[in-house]
Amino acid sequence: MRIIPAIDIINGKCVRLSQGDYQTQKVYHEDPLEVAKQFEASGIQYLHLVDLDGARAKRLINHSVLEKICTQTELHVDFGGGVQSHQDIQMAFECGAQQVTAGSIAVKNPLLFLDWINQYGKDKIILGADCHNRRIATHGWLENSDWEVVDFIQQYKHQGVEYVICTDIEKDGMLAGSSFELYQEIIEKTQVKLIASGGVSSLSDLKQLKEMGCEGAIIGKAIYEGNITLKELETLC
Image 1: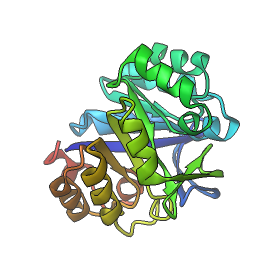
Image 2: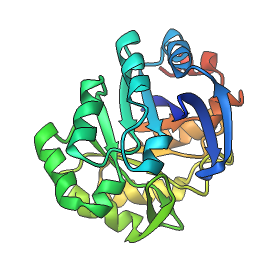
Image 3: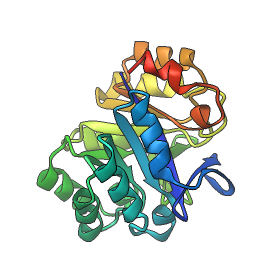
Image 4: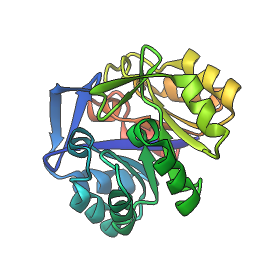
């Protein structure tokens, strides 16, 4: 299972939210590049980078941060947040992203999302399936849709999606454990390469996600708050 630390960006700074609420933002570092370098120095190979400004504005904003991290580290970066157009996704890849996570566009403009799958390849596009009470949420979790999360993933699995990041918004940033039952259901019913996100609070959470068959696990606040240390992660990378 891939260990994937997360860096969320607002105003060019490394922040974390609780349950996706922008009013709860806490700044952990002024320079996301320095955080990325710390991850890399600890043996981390992957990074989940989210442009929260972009998610809210519905267009890519913090592309300069993405470019700095991609050009000054060897991290495999998947990037999301505000990727809503051909121009956005092209810029993300030109800035060095190895993969792009797209969620809102898969709800609002399925044809465009599927065009990206065909154009860039299923290994380059990750379906973002963030949910609240099992309903898909979009645009930085500020809008809700009628899509049930498992149905949403299954629909796109049939159309070529291979990688999925699923965040249970109620768990995100709460350090109370992941949505193990939901993730187990998704894996069993869809057979996608599932990257679990939200709520990871301990090494035992990571162990359980690995045993369930998750392809990857994203860790955010647990690192920044010291619940899981980079030294501990070194043994897993």
